[in-house]
Length: 357
Ligand code: ATP
Image (cartoon, rainbow, N blue to C red; front, side, top):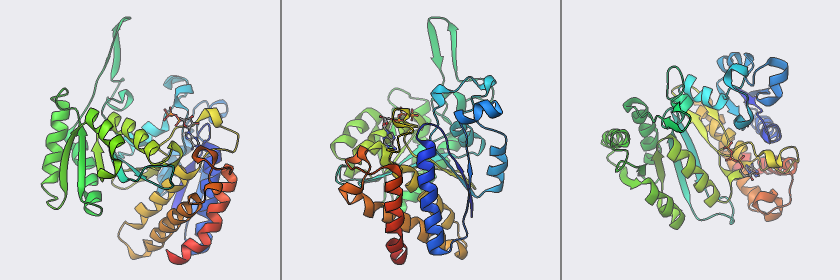
């Protein structure tokens, strides 16, 4: 398996280095055929290449089986015509990565008891740059009025809903679809209608329909009542930050963007510029995202890919093991360890974890 690791902005390079160390260690322990190519993207590339996404990015994606994208400080990027390319959005739309899978399980006692997965549609909704073939889905007809278009299609809804139901069938067999169809009658009406049709193909999975405002309070009241949370792009973005925080902190939330034949691992959190360069960021989310990428690859049928499932399982166990020791955690979750020290602790725990994976 060949993976490209895009190092990103803010804390991106630090948590990328930590993730690379963990991947290299698991590769060595399991004699895994794994090649990780590291490529900087983001603000660091603007001066040298005139763009945040040098053209080599697409060659690497072409050559690789999957990618890891560290967080990007897109709000600090210049406009597109001056080289400010948001790779997160580009990957999701150009590689057709319809589903964003964001697990939130309590990994330490700083979080609430919960084990849910947010499955978020990734390519349309209210995200202005993703909704149009040309131009942006946001415009100002006069200086005092602004409009944003929201796009929902049957095809994207069917694909993300299928991902959610397949996942739920392997878990606690419940999908909660989050919507606002009482107000957005046409767009969320269509979303709901398509989700109901997909649910007919999964008779063993319960479908629950919850309004987004009610979902926000129900998630806080009892996150353990949810299994798979299926929703559109912006609702999913917001609710998954809420669930990551409920599970213990933003630094813990992994994610995987999945299409038919490519996947991009990404932490749920942003580039955290307030703590960049201090070696204090929590690399858990990106490390666990890389484990999700190995799992995704390993689950693609052929028997020779099973070692990747073992690697993914071992990384998850090692991270859990380290987070169980309060003093081994990074400071955002109450510990004292630096980013590098945390990664080293995960690598030490891996030698035990691979034996039982
Ligand atoms: P974006 O809009 O790019 O998703 P955001 O507005 O959600 O970003 P973050 O960059 O995720 O913001 O940061 C929010 C807060 O969480 C900041 O105080 C940041 O320091 C903290 N934070 C985020 N990720 C981590 C991490 N991995 N380790 C420690 N703290 C983090």
